[in-house]
Length: 207
Image: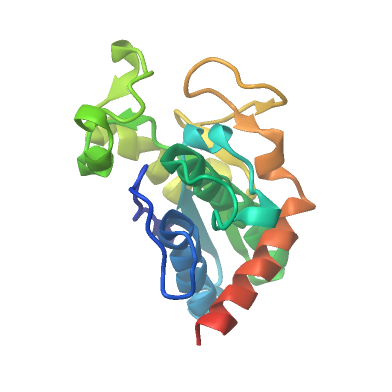
């Protein structure tokens, strides 16, 4: 199993030497490079699972294909974060499609609202500040959905899905209740291969 959990949230405006926006690179491209680099090892295992840790923050922004790296748009740390988290879900969709014959599945998971060092760039270290206190989880509670996706026999052969609170989430066409559901654009089977191709090209360009 591979759990892609590392990430940043709502960072100040930063770019790589290639001019790529830092949250997109950290939250998506680094994980993409790791997973594709480990493909042969995962396939050799016979059955393998990838867990892409995303966020309900993906509902803040789809992939803005014409300006992923804020070359023209005014930079907004939350839009950049949302776009990168959308990319995590799309990765799970496409990895499952491409690697099904290798018995590799990938699912995206929303851990929930948890106060950790991830929120260090936000006001008071409390993330967006919009989550009701009763919905805040402990670290252990937040880890539960990732553990479920990585280990549960219920998900044998299941991939390309989005899970929250150890359940598959509803697909939404409009933003719903806090922390609930996955935006349809984040599981779009047309967006997923487009992002994959773009990510492959970015890795080639980086070298």
